[in-house]
Picture 1 (cartoon, rainbow, N blue to C red):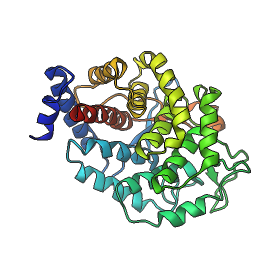
Picture 2: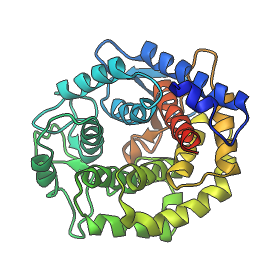
Picture 3: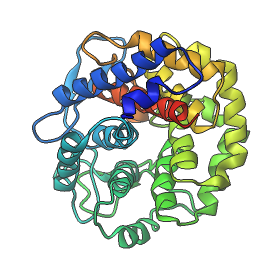
Length: 331
């Protein structure tokens, strides 16, 4: 039996919904294929909050997230051409094992968020790199408490940043990379658990607006890199998601992020079914989902400048649907 047949004949849900799921995956992947730039990049847009002056900006950051999401789609569909092109793009933007948000030789510092998200995605596809050497080098970019800063300020600095922020979403992404390597970072793990226990994650972080961005990044570290030391935080995130997930409906990106969070936490209930049904309903006729605010330029522009894209929302929605479909097939 092929994968489509496995979904359709799996137990638990009506056959019509199962067909909708596989059709959604095919149309979403087709949208990403058409959206991908010739270089292999998946585009991201930049705009001023509450205004319509949207413009494309080259980054490597969004492509790393799309590549991660596609890893879960490949159980059902062939992603080889798209993923190879994206991997080539990311490798071409590397500078001595590091990445800048706007890409190679751009006028911005290297940063831990971009670098570790790219490294994690490449590691997930078994790309041959000196991960251990790079990981050891990155350890020096922590503060006195062992928590990672955002910016790498001692290499080729084109400008000075007076405030090297500590961001909990950034630290979740850094931990994801190290967890894929099997490295223990107890200070970061305990920091992230505290962020959940004291409710700080519900607030805007220095660079991310929505708590669902943190939930997505934290729970992928727990579920996709098998970092079970985060279990105390995941238990509280589960309760939070069950309480608020319905409130994300109306924002496709937040709904996609929350849906992945539900599934990463092991929630396979009416809430996850409804979240997936909502994502299916929000998919456009072209196969994509609308853009949403994934991150901001932070305090430097008073959170006014934001970033997101249709490709990014679509990839995360497909990740949620794929993870749900995988659960269906295994039933």
